[in-house]
Every structure is written in C-alpha cells, then in structure tokens.
Length: 193
View 1: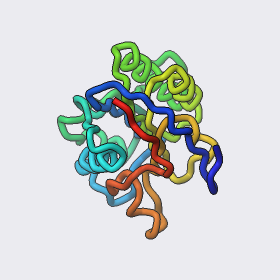
View 2: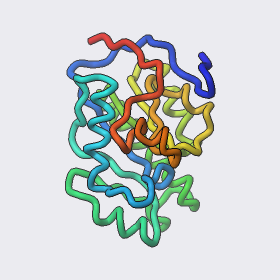
View 3: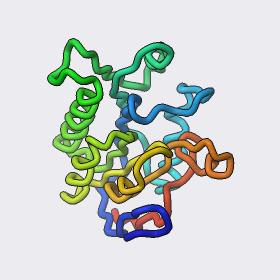
View 4: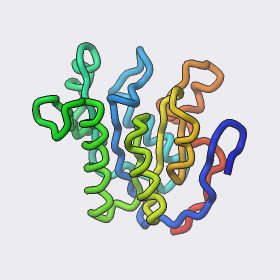
C-alpha cells in the first residue's frame, strides 16, 4: 500500500515470543551521520525498537557487516565489545567486488539467523542487492524490520514488515530517525504474541 512517498506493509504480523530481535548492520551501505558517536548506536537502536514495541530487546551482539577504508575503517575497528564485527575483505571473498561481497555476507548472516529460528530480525542497510532476500523472508513469515538511509529508493520501504529511516540531514526529520531513537515510519502494524 502506498502512503505519501513511502510504501508500507500491511499489518499482518505474527511474531515469535519473546520479542528478542537480532540486529544486522550493513555499515558499508548504511553509515551513521558524521559526528555521531558509534558507541551510542546500539542504545539508539534499542530506543527505536522500544518505540515500535515495548517488548522488543536486542538479542546478543549487534552484527556489523561490510567493507570500510580510511576513517570509517578506523571507526569500525574501535567498536565496543557488544558488536560482532564481520568485515568483508577483498582477499577472502567469493566475488571480486567488495559491494557484492557485502551483499553476499549480509544475506548469509540473515539466512543463518532465520535458519536458527531467530524470527525477529532488524536489518540496517541501503544495499539494493539484499532487498530481494529481505522481501522473500518476509513473505515466508519471518518478521523482518528494516532501517534505511535517507538516500534509499522509496520502493525499498515495502520489503519489510516495519521500516525506519536510519538518519536524516533535515533537522525536522532527524529527531524521528533510528540513530536518534525515533519510531518507525507509520503505519506500525499490530503485534500478536
């Protein structure tokens, strides 16, 4: 269903109980705003999840996937211990392109979590190559949430059950974004446990 500029999913959600959420962050395609403290990211995600459903909590470590160079590489290597870092290196990949490698790694991580009965998954990515997989898992009844960069194609918004805007340079929109603990893009579905 289309509302305004965004595609949104119909409210037909049945989640697993308890409301543990596995978080997979594609830092290559969904970097946080300049000047934002990476050490605050997990706390902001927790707040955003609580605004969607008060029973949500992050299960285990936040999984960080991607390829970074320069300042971003330095920032990623300094992540706190509550992150599981899965860097994609050009020399250990199944494809020659780091962008394709990141998409492949993210889909593999997502698939492994689904196969291990992690029914509530938040993917933070703007990589168009993973949206098909996210959409297929959603169609198979896996509860997938998605946080997208502001520059993402609005057609991605319908891929998941619930969608957030990760960040925004617009001061009026920034407070409602995930990096600031904001809620998802309406409408938010009803949850049944």
